[in-house]
Every structure is written in structure tokens, then in C-alpha cells.
Image (tube, rainbow, N blue to C red; front, top):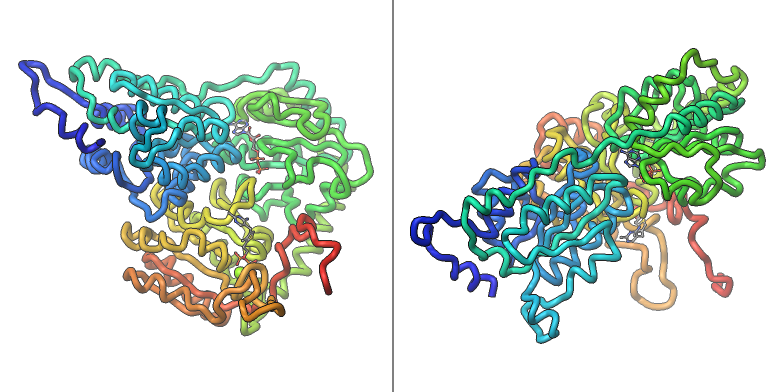
Length: 577
Ligand code: ADP
Ligand code: TPW
Ligand code: MG
């Protein structure tokens, strides 16, 4: 049907008038708003759209599965503050992309999922169209906003709404439904041009009230044991200099959340990353900047936060976030650039935090770092996580511009703690949901959006969720080095099923050679069995910029169930020993 609609398009002119159509209007609308990259998978009704967009100078990255294209778009949004665009076909393609749209919304990343859809009249009467599905209704509860454009003259305004909804306030995912018929609709070219909208000031600054700034500073100044927590919202805000100056001026220990790492280097004297339990437990005033008190921070209460009463200050663009889990005594609502700027401005002379607190935190940190050091230098074969991660830690130190993508369980938790990050937005990972499958999509978008080399540190299970995209990486010749921590399975490769001849549910084929996969597509594969081999292979890959996949053989006994979050795993009380 879509193809029929395209064919109906009259030749170049109708009388004297110049004409345009839905395809061209959407392309022009995207370009007008600086959306020059699309991540997607082609098919009816968007195949021609992809071709035409490419011809018009838009970069169209064609993936092997929409979920990976969607994750790419979501992280493009995080890295650039512009909505990442994902383009899919109807029903199944749309559903494949939807997980990523929900993920973008959950993580506060701006993204637009544009999906072709089938004929409204048939969908609404449920008469069984090709890939029939009421996509708008399904998308609505899973994203920040969902719109449908039915007429070519509304493409401009529809995209403008989508962009504004994605990036203003708390960023999130937006669904834009594009029925097949829309693309072939023809209209006067001049009128079409006039219908386009360039979004002015898509994410207006949100200035915090001066009262809220004063209240926050008063509380922070009163602290005997202050702590600042920097979340991925702070990284997203791109207010790097202001954040660094503010944190340094307070002299307070800071704790970066996973993707907040690098806003100030992990090696900064105030960094309390290696004294996490101490600062959570013993702090008396905690300022959250772009971080939510969700499960990743034990909801701001309970054992992790200790007995002593605590006062929370929260800086966030979303007013509803305040008091979400515990009382926020000093809410500062606004965009982080404006809020941190205002606090810096109003601070005046700032007293250093009590010396005994600073000393407690730094000694704990130094003690933990020293304890870890010898483990990172071990040369065990087969490798354990520490030996392999010690190597990657050195490599990232020497290459602080590289972007680190990280997923897995043990591979995630240990890499997060061990690999220091030195610059903002250089670490991207499983995010708020702890989702497996972001790996290759994130790597592709990171390379495309930043032009920097990418190092992916992947559990063997985690990698499997998006592994087919190594072909995409090879096809676009991206500077991506994938290191697979191959421990033969999920958490550990040693599980045994005693009930039948089937393998246990958490183990994979033993001794798999993931490096062979990339060779099928012309990339470089390396099997690394020792820290030295791993070091050589990664350095070579990063120097060459060639797509590389390194199968790092890890002792199957080295990991633990669910990594660091085994406590969240319910166990059957009736389980037989
Ligand atoms: P983390 O997982 O790193 O702790 P979260 O995703 O939980 O971070 O929190 C990010 C927070 O940052 C969200 O509450 C979001 O509303 C907020 N945020 C995102 N962008 C901005 C911004 N530009 N200004 C202020 N707050 C922001
Ligand atoms: C979309 C559940 C959490 S971690 C993990 C799974 C399947 C894989 C851990 O094994 P891996 O790492 O990657 O080999 P390692 O080093 O511990 O062996 N489906 C989705 N998301 C999640 N989080 C899961 C399942 C899970
Ligand atoms: Mg594994």
C-alpha cells in the first residue's frame, strides 16, 4: 500500500506549481532542526525515506535490529543534548524499537522513535492490514509524549512538538507515528516549506528561585560531613566547568554515579568513589546533582545510609522528583547549568569542610585503593576480572578521550569500580534499568556522534544481546574495540544442571571463540588468554582504529551470582540444597 502511495505521486510538476511530498518534508524538517543522523532498519514504508534522507546529506545508519538502533539513538541523545532519531517499520519493527524508547525515557535521554504505520482506516476497524497495529496507543504509556502526523502540511509542526517534548524539562523518549500514506502526500512546495518549523530554544533554561539557592547553600554550609553526588543528569547537562568549580569550591567529597564518572576525574583528591559505603553511611548532608534516589542509591534510606539523620539537597529539573523517596530539605528545581551557576555565584567565601571528615574519607579511599592495587597487577592465566581490568584501566588512563561502553554483571560492576574515567560523558553503560543489550548500539552511536575511539567492555552474555551489530561496526568501519569477558556464561560458567542432560540455564558453550565472529565481516579478531596478550591486542586495536573483537578468556569460577547486586535476587525458601 505504501509503495502504491509513492507511485501515485505525480511527476515533478502539476501545471506550473512546484510540488513536494511527505518524504521530502520530513527530511527538510529534520535538517532544519539539525537532526542530521538517523539510526534505524529499513522496510515498508520507510525504505525510500532512508534512501532519500541519505541522498539529502543525512547520515543514515542501517542496523541489524531496531533495538540496537534505538539504543544508539538514546545514547546519541545523552551525548549531544539533541534528540537521537530512530526510524523503524511498522508493528514488529516498532515494537523492537520500543524497548529502547522506554529505556530512553527511564534514563532521561532525549530520543525520537519514528515508525511507519499502516492505514488508519484499516487499523482502527481492525481489518488486518499489513503489519497492523495501533502503535500510538501502545507507545503512549512508555514514553514522555506520542504524536501522529496525518497530513503532510503537519509534518513540520509534528516534528517540532516531538523535538520540544524530548529535550525540554526532564528529557525523555517521544514517539512519532508516521502512517505510510503520509509519505506520498503531495503539496505545493512553497507552502510545504512555509509549514516547516525550526524549533527556537528547544530546551529553555530553567532558572532556580534565589530562595531555593540560598536554602541549599545554607544547608550545605551547615554540614559537618558533606557529600555531593553527581549523576548522569549532571553529565547530560554539559555544565562541566561550573560543576567542577562548584565541587572544588565546596571542598566536599563527591561520589560519581556510574555515568557521572569523569565530570571530575576519578583520581581527583575529592573523589570518594573508592569510599562509597563510608560516605553514604556517615555523611550528614547530601547534595544530589542530576541523580535520583532510586534503587541505585538504595532509595536514600536503610542500611546503606547508616543510622545518623541525614539532610538531602536535590538539584534537578523535574519538580516531581523532590521527596520521591525521602524528604528533600532543600529542593533546587532548575536546569543544572543554571542551578550550579547560581550556587557558585551566591557562595561567597566558603569554609572548608571539617578536616576530620575529609581525612576519614581520604584514608578510607586510599586504603581501599591500596588493597585493590596488587590484585589489578596479577598475571593469572586463565585471567580473573581484576587481572584483565587492571590492563584496561591502564589503557584508558593513557587514552582518556576514548569512550568506554560497559555491560554485564561482574564485568560491569568490577569495571565500574576499577577503570578510572577522566573526562565527562566518557563512560556509558546499562543505566537505570541495568539493561543488557545496549553494548553495540551505544558503541556505534558513540563513534558516530563523537568521532572518538570506543572501547566496549562486555560480559559474554551481555554482548550476545546485540552481537550481530559487529557487522554494522565493520560495515561503517568504526573505531570500536570490543573486549568480551568470556567466562562461559552469565555470572559464572560453572553452573551444573543435575536434573537432565540440558546445560544449566546460566552457562554457554565452553571455550567459545567470539573473536571469530568479527572475522566473518572483515574485522580483526584476537583470542587473549593472558593480561599481556590483552594489553597488546587492545593497544593495537586502539592505535589502528580498526573494528576489533577480543575474546578475553576469563576463569569461569571468577565471578559471583548477579555481580554486586546479588542481594536483589530472591531465592526460593523451598529450594533443595
Ligand atoms: P544516575 O542514574 O546517574 O543516578 P538518574 O538518571 O537517576 O542519574 O538521574 C538523572 C536526573 O537528572 C533526573 O532526575 C533528571 O530529571 C535530571 N536531569 C537531567 N537533565 C537535567 C538538566 N539539564 N538539569 C537538571 N536536571 C537534569
Ligand atoms: C534485557 C538479566 C543481568 S546481568 C546478565 C543478565 C542476563 C548477564 C551477566 O552475564 P555476563 O557478565 O554479561 O556474561 P558476567 O561477567 O557476570 O558473566 N535481560 C535484560 N537485562 C538484564 N539485566 C537481564 C536480562 C541479566
Ligand atoms: Mg559472563
